[in-house]
Amino acid sequence: MTIFRKLLAAFVAAGLTACNAAPSPAAKPPKEGRPALWKLADEDTTIWLFGTIHVLPPGYKWRDAVIDKAVAQSDGLVIEAILDRTDPSKAMALLARIGMTPGLPPLVDRVPADKKAALAALIARSKVPPRVLDGMDTWSGALMLMPVLLGDLGLAGGIGVEEQLEGDFKAVNKPIEGLETAEQQLRVLDGMPEDAQRQFLIAMVDDGADQKVEFEKMLTAWARGDEKGISASFDKDVRVSPELREALLVRRNAAWTEWLKARLDKPGTVFVAVGAGHLAGNDSVIAMLKAKKLKVQRVQ
Image (cartoon, rainbow, N blue to C red):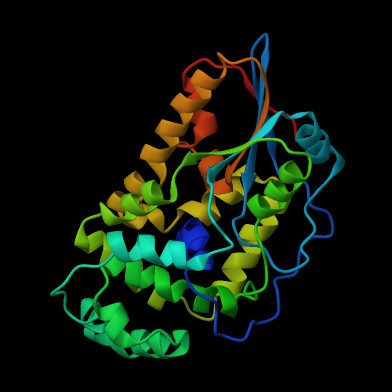
């Protein structure tokens, strides 16, 4: 499994349950971070497009003068979704409403026989009662286990780029809006076929000793603004499941592209921050904008 799916869903997992695993040492950052930044503009509108990582190691430094200037110039912030980080019970209530179905087999029986022991161990480490997970859909059960994997990567105490940006805009009373709601994001996962949901769960179980290496590769590519590296790191395992790729990446990118196109009709400057995997590769928002002959250029 690549880290892509984990970080794509980390916005949910971070709000669902505290990680009970002891955090491992954080990934070592590059000496200098220069994440990629794009500019989409017309005569009276500027949209900064910035690719993020939803969860970072504690204390990770990624800001630079170019990004700070774009943030300062912006009238508002747009992120994937606005989440209530102060009250995890709201996220749990939402997950319970959308992600629970009676009569399902136990979660450990939804993976192949050779994966059951590893899944049982992951469940034990999560401290989530098995009876709770057994009543959940496969995708939502997988999300409940995600904090353990984030802890293994040293991310248990870290926060993401979006949270830091939200703090900046709140401090100066500038508006923040979301491209999606938390419910819409969960509905994307809930709408996947059961086979795809089980692939999601199996991929989490399959995370082995190389996950830290994979995360460091992704983090390094992001920090250097390496589009090819970002695309390869975020994208390679999603290609294994066309259903996952279509649901989590392609359809959302297309919807966001239409939103950005429409936003050009409103004068002003806005800073749009979404997961870096959405801005790199052939099916990225950047590629879709260019296909529509819109003026988008990389500025860093």
